[in-house]
Image (cartoon, rainbow, N blue to C red; front, side):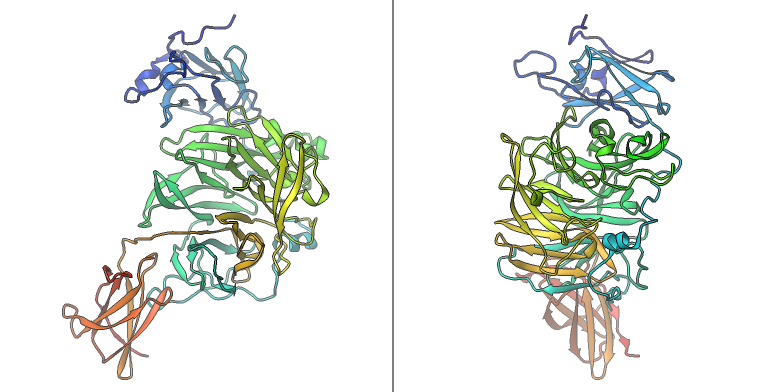
Length: 621
């Protein structure tokens, strides 16, 4: 017999009684739509019922129920027994997580007993199975590649080597990768800056004197803001909104070829770190995606190597596979609001990738690389190595439909089939917009941006629009496409290192690339107003009868004019000359040979933005 809902029982975990309401005493929760106490509909639990590859450090999360309405919950492991836990309310008041003081044992069945109407459970009870992380971890499954495939994955057009890092007299410590403008910006391109995260192409040696990190450049390729990163790598640098304010975000961490382990950085308009977001349940975020929703939650991706039977794909019984995990985290509390596992929902034989050649090399059959919310609140994810796009239910995780691959829900004309694709999103016109790599191994000679029109009644898909770069680019890895409004699309060409903008008629409005030998996983064009807490940087040198002053202000976007102040003492400076801002660093020639100089930054209305320190003028060598 089913236990009654809303029975008022207390939360019992391993013999320790916790009153759920105590954990959320300061919060107020609404009632169901009909005014009765209790959840208005099904409750969703994560890890979801039947998950075969849950982390041993999993908490148990419930969504769709106020924390003070959880009732009695018992959680026990088949080997470790009942567990003590604490209830942590989700910041939106629509759920709670039970957090345990120590991990579960690998390979045990964890049973959860509740009086809730949990989707996928039996009378509110469900279970999931934990799995251990193989000793080899993510491994390096792409190191022994045939030369032709290696070239398709990492090769770039042109033979030039990476250019030297840019040098600035006022900021010699900033040495970002150079950016080449191949087609200047045309009328119609929306205002904004170009956000990239350059890195050395796999197999290439970094150019001496070049640093890497999040890089914002203007349409002349001049840096606007650059933050050198000495620990780990950076990917997916962009502007997002957090707590109603614009912020910069990027992934930072350890990268092993096409996978990564790290965390998301969030900085404010003054470039101060305000949050570091980690994945939940003991995982680390992969670099492919970390998207902040309107509810201040983060949708991210995880690559979790697990022990798995690979005989269906020609591998060993005791092999290794990478379980692709999609996770939503409450940024405020760090609690898990949603978790989806590919090995629970997509059979391993649907992958197109090469199966591993050894038991220690994990088979990355799925390779999830994007997740975004659809218009109905459910999720759309892209899986590179199955050539598929899946729509998954936000609560149960069940696959609602599949586009492409070996078991497509839709009938796909040959020209509509994606291959090795990245960054799938719903476009404003209702189509699916896809960065369709078509390599590697190569399926079509060129990568493209593909817009697919789906008819969900007849289950047919057709090509609504496509675009290929006029330089015949084939990106073996990475890439993205961003809607800028009015039919304009901004494109990052992944491993080729290019980034472009096109209009609704596929006319190229802008095109650039990072120095050869480098690439950027994604590229974005977005407006940004930066207000750095630092002062402008100045360097000055006497040359002949005059003095040259170099000035810059890393991250300041509102500077229109520089005013040079000069004098024979640091506290007796007077205006000497003004000049308009000219790129990241402006060189200004002033008459005379003062001992000290400083600069004053002004905006377009002439208002003062900041003043540098007085710097001693050096003699030319």
